[in-house]
Length: 569
Ligand SMILES: *[C@@H]1O[C@H](CO)[C@@H](O)[C@H](O)[C@H]1NC(C)=O
Ligand SMILES: *[C@@H]1O[C@H](CO)[C@@H](O)[C@H](O)[C@H]1NC(C)=O
Ligand SMILES: *[C@@H]1O[C@H](CO)[C@@H](O)[C@H](O)[C@H]1NC(C)=O
Ligand SMILES: *[C@@H]1O[C@H](CO)[C@@H](O)[C@H](O)[C@H]1NC(C)=O
Ligand SMILES: *[C@@H]1O[C@H](CO)[C@@H](O)[C@H](O)[C@H]1NC(C)=O
Ligand SMILES: *[C@@H]1O[C@H](CO)[C@@H](O)[C@H](O)[C@H]1NC(C)=O
Ligand SMILES: *[C@@H]1O[C@H](CO)[C@@H](O)[C@H](O)[C@H]1NC(C)=O
Image 1 (spheres, rainbow, N blue to C red):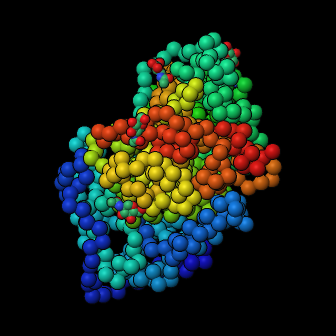
Image 2: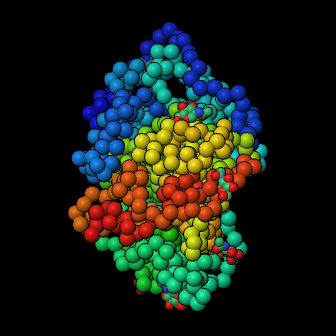
Image 3: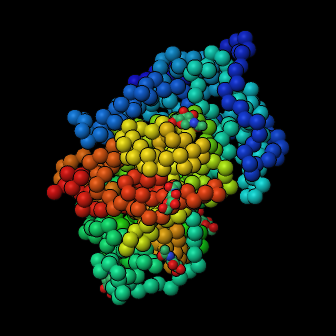
């Protein structure tokens, strides 16, 4: 925080002085726009664009050590989460970096604003002509051939050679908008199937759950309590992008039907950024947003839930929204303890520097006690969505070791994997030690199969799974069935939030970054899924097997066992 003060005052002292032109070095360059985008023309030189620049962080390795120190059950500091300032100190740029960047900005008469508490991201809005001059770039308008979406991007940018060691990422530059909802199938409106025990193969679960998934089905299958949570400090955040709005009247209809034991007025709070909103016009209710809210508010009974809606102002495509929502949470003194997201691009659509930076931001939140959950993706081994491919495709941020990926299953007698459930191995991040044993055991059974199609040394995903098919969702007052890992991340987020509620109630720290705990103390608290596979790229994909596998991870949650693993008696 101190450093931030210094940073701001340096900026305000900055005076433009004539300096000799700097020697520019190419930082990032691509040969052509990604598939789907074509050059539509020059950008008007006067168009203002908001640029964000990431400065080199002083101690990312220290951040990682601190994250594992507070997240590993065997560590003396387990659960002793960092404050905002403590986490920020690891990523604050060095004085040398700050002053080199400020000198250069002053030469261009640009005043930047810190975007994070650490000041490792700064932002400024300049005309296209100035952006081109500062970065030897060629910002132009690109259009998506199918959607018509346009974006101002450059295929290459450079930075002064004195800054190459100080400037890490320029956004937007070479990242094109690619973020998709992780929702596989939305079926036609359906009549509501009455819940019945008739013909149930497993007497503990209503037979109707075989064709229609509801909050009570999830409670029955996983032993999730229906009793109301009691801790008002324990919050669950649901990310909203892409003008997906969550409708309160739909939630009420959903609760009336599926949670008659709850007040149908139970709702959520709203936080917005980038001009986001939550328009309540019924016809504008978003399938993804309604699903995400109905299966958090409707499963995490009475846990305070916040819908965070990112608009499109100045975020230049959805990864700008990812950055801005992350920055918003980093700046909160008490961020939500659980954060679920069901959107994402593929890893190879995100430049490595930007990917590492976002992942380090997740590490900061994890070190502060936030459990970050993402839907793993709906394309099996072919990525976020089903796609043509010759090698397996990794969704983003699934490869990031500092968050938790949730895959999908279906059925309960037995529970098997959903064929769309993305799984595999990152090309950007190496396998973290917390999952080494589990993943190596799987790789041993896989042998040479698919050699060359995936990166055997990469961080493997998903970590866990839950039901993900035929979730009954109310949209514009009608009941639909939806499929996708988008069903699974809110479900698992609710499970974690309910455990956190109990932990807070017994004076214990919340679960925080889950993975070191999941793969050790809690590894036996999952229903092992051993049937099914995730085909893609012209292959049968990986198999669900005994133990961890790249389809369902450790398996689906057993609430009673997770309680014990969390030290709740
Ligand atoms: C953090 O939040 C405070 C208070 O809401 C705000 O004044 C400040 O500008 C924010 N800082 C950043 C870096 O966003
Ligand atoms: C299961 O179905 C029966 C009707 O046969 C119903 O009374 C009961 O509430 C259902 N169980 C749950 C947990 O919804
Ligand atoms: C999902 O619902 C559809 C339509 O009701 C049904 O045909 C299908 O068998 C169900 N699938 C599963 C796995 O429950
Ligand atoms: C819901 O809110 C309305 C309006 O505030 C109120 O009239 C109604 O009694 C509430 N219903 C329940 C079930 O609490
Ligand atoms: C919500 O959307 C409707 C229809 O698109 C629009 O007429 C209305 O102005 C919007 N409301 C707000 C508050 O933006
Ligand atoms: C495989 O992953 C490692 C890190 O785990 C990385 O260094 C390497 O570049 C990756 N290989 C490919 C071909 O992407
Ligand atoms: C998956 O299981 C099937 C049936 O046992 C087997 O034939 C196949 O080789 C397995 N595939 C992989 C990738 O392990």
